[in-house]
Amino acid sequence: MSSFDTPNGSVVTSYAKAVTRSITSGGVTYAYRELGPKAGIPVVFFVHLAATLDNWDPRIIEPIAKNRHVITFDQRGVGASTGQVPGSIEAMADDAYTFIKVLGFDQVDIFSFSMGGMIAQDLLLKHPDLVRKVVLAGTGPRGGKDIDKVVSTTYWDILRATLTRADPKEFLFFNRNATGKPAAKAFIKRLQERTVDRDMPISVRAFQTQLKAIRRFGRSAPSDLSQLTHPTLIANGDNDRMVPSILSGDLHRRIKGSELIIYPDSGHGGIFQFHDRFSPVAVEFLAH
Image (tube, rainbow, N blue to C red):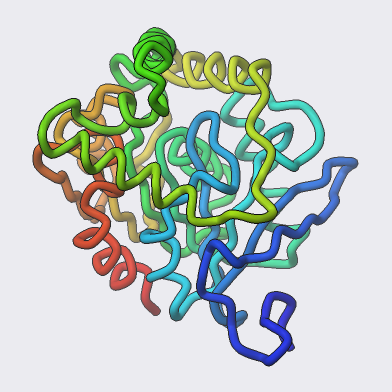
């Protein structure tokens, strides 16, 4: 029986039922969940700013886990993982490398979103042989124009959400219009499907440290993305207020042979709003 099969031997494909596990390396204990068949190259998910294990949309995770070994994890100092949140995206990439290697993998596919996509880029540049394929959703390149404004945008939308008693992601990820508002509500509802063994929310201090790391990433000199030869799928909505949509086009131009999907009338969470269209594309892209 694989480590995350149910007692009767069936494979776990529901993210709500995936067991939270932990593994330690270098004094840091990483919390993670895995689902899907334990065979082949795993797909490791790199999550967004302020996010924990509970912030992945099941409608994105589960279609991929039908045929692939899927792993989600908390970065150092986030959720149930121990230690301090690093002050830079590069250090977060080093932690991701440590986590993948301590699990014993020599090659992985990466599915990344937002800050996770920034971490993925740094990991790809430093350890190109570790990664086979990569999905970069709702993200942008080091030194990308206006990435450093994510701090003010985030705080403003947290304030707006607080005043309306809403989840900040409803403002940060979705357009505030007739299509965006119901999509936001549906997304937040899907994140609540797991009712037991939920993760610890990120601390305010850890969140602030992540924000500063993103601002530093946005103000840094650009990386040479022409070095990247990995099959790459880039996706976003056409009105991303957090990481401007134009930066997805910038990534597409700079990463040779990459594919680009921009969803209409959607924001930072375009892949979640259009999960029914995006998931099959992601499954096909990541297929062997």
